[in-house]
Amino acid sequence: MGNARITLGKMGEDLACRELERRGYAIVARRYRRRGGELDIVARDGPTLVFVEVKTRDGRWFGGAAEAVTGLKRRRIVQLALEYLMRHRLSECPCRFDVVSIQLEAGRPVIEIHRNAFGASF
Image (cartoon, rainbow, N blue to C red; front, side):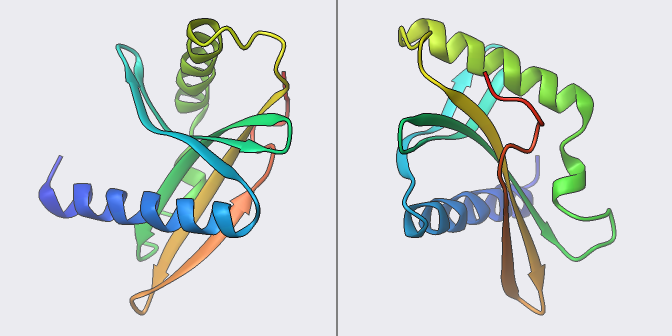
């Protein structure tokens, strides 16, 4: 991964955390890494544990940011979330998956939060 892409991703995660906190989420973990990949953000929204995928795009050459969360990516995130729940003994905790889409337009971020983006909570 190139430095510019890493920098863009980190900036996007920072922006996402600030926006989530502004909306009342409490950030629990960032960049939770396991063998199968990484959860960008784990947060609490009231009693619900939220696994947040952040997608940041500079321009629309490759489509919108939210479109980048493919079926394969969703399956990986779900597997990582299940592992997180088991490791932290949170099997009874209500959960959902959100996607934060950050589109840079003329250098300014446009942030959208897609709640329950995977269509099912568990």
